[in-house]
Amino acid sequence: MGKKKKREEEVPVIREKKRKNTFAFLDKQFDSLDLATVKRHIVILIIAALITKFVVIIATGSVFHSFIDLFDIGYYYEHALPLLQGQIPYVNYQVDYPVLVFVPITIALVPATIAQNVMVFVYTFQLLMVLCDLMSLVCIYLIALKIWNEKTALIAGLVYATAFSTAYFVLTKYDAFPTMLLMLAVLFTVYGKSMQGYIFAVIGFFAKMFPVIAVPFMILHNAKSTSIKQEIFSVVKVAVPLFVILFIPIFILHPASINTYLFATGSGVGVYVNSATYTLYTYIHEIGHLGVSSDAISLVMYAIMGIVFLLLLYLAYTEKEQNPKKLLKIVLCAIFSLVFFTKFHSPQYIVWFTPFLCLLISDDLIKIGLFYVTQIFAYIEFPLMFGNYYVNLQYVNPVGSASWYLTLIFFTLEYLALLALVFLIIRPHEGFRERIKKMVSRT
Image (cartoon, rainbow, N blue to C red; front, side):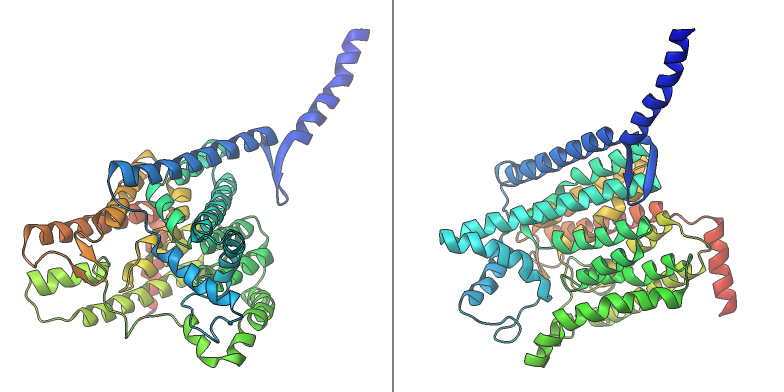
């Protein structure tokens, strides 16, 4: 009897130990998940991401005999050097990026100045972008834990960690930094920390403007438990101080600095040939021989983009309860629409929406397979095809040649694959169709 009694007394102690080791994040308790497992998963994901980046660097040069594009990092370095001469960005010289671009630029400039070596700047900047990408990876895992389960969350992280085309652009561009800010905004929003979510989304606007696209949908998501008026007020409380600190002083010194924050629909920007707009134009004008200009098609594409955004706002507004998965789908559609319908296209834009793809495909092998197909297309587009088959504003080969048709077919298949993947993710269900019918009947 004594031994039995002793065992019964030990049970609460054992249970208490298990409870202490249970994983919790931002007031969310995961009863079936322990802290050690989460740490192990994150280590696995980080190792997978680092290996992927290393393989991409080696394979790009040694296997595919292509190049690591350092043009953008060179641009950042050129705009860092005037700081050493006491010049003020936007006031003494023009910068095409919002003000927070100077956070990684300044950090990378310090060791480069000490070493008097531009390659130190390059390597430091790349390291900073890798760290930002790893933070996005952790955000993806934690968000996936909230909307899926432990296994699916790990898969979501692994898919992102091995997204090799995205890894290439993390190493060569600046977009990993604003993407990290967007993912932090989504992470806090999904876990019910609305103010922190707004802070990171608005900060993201001052890094590169696309993160602010998520704000209206975050407002409508959070308003399900409060009110739209209250959420708008919360955004204002966050945005005004940041606006006063990060924008007003430079604007006072140089009012033309506002041009940096104006969305370049682009009267002075041509239609990039790797855009969906130019691909459609090529079929209509070059193959169909219809006298329609690329600018006219671009205007139609922008009009469609506006309609899509209004539709997304309507769907977010009519959603009856907070649903993190639907928030992710709507933000994905918003960012993807921005990329798809815009007439200028940089291949690194894939970095913006890859996290959302990985979060929403991780429960389905077919979607995962199609995702890697889109990664292959993106990697072939840049760097492998660039310069040999197309440059920003034209196909390299003459119209009607075999290589010209090959370029057109390639971009056609690339965009069809992306559209198919997004469609599979947001595949309409009955409730969606009914809401669309109601909206149409009201109009």
